[in-house]
Image: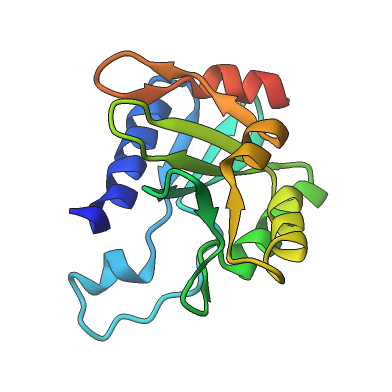
Amino acid sequence: MAKNTGKNFENEIRRSLKGAKCFWFRIQDTNDVSRYVKKAIAEKQPADFMAVYRGVPILIECKTTRNLTAFPLYYGDTRSIPAHQVNYGKTLQRNGGVSLILLRRDEPRNKTVYALTPEQVAYLYRSFGKSRKSVPWKWIEEHSTVVERLAKPIRWNLVKLFTAIL
């Protein structure tokens, strides 16, 4: 069940985008394609979703964890937020777009989503990644944008988030 939390969060964001009055699509990754074609090889993708809101392109990457004390920067030796996703986000922003990494703290009956920029995520890996393998939620709460939760079915107020950052 724990391995499905990421797909559940992506479904929440999908439902949220449907209500956000914007153009959007899900970016298929190798795992999605390999379900149908066993030898599929796909390019590394910049994020989970691409949206355009009021003429501004927005990349959205979704990450989730059940760890209630900190967000893990690594799973073993593998980064939880790959460097290529941070770099794609920075490149989009240099070209007039917006990139958001959404982190969901998956606490039962009290889920919270935080929006960070690629620059903030790069800072986390520079500052916390060397000495520890995770970032305390307290730092994330103080330095990110909390995304408002909407009523059932669980969704997130992306219009309010997009309006705040544009």
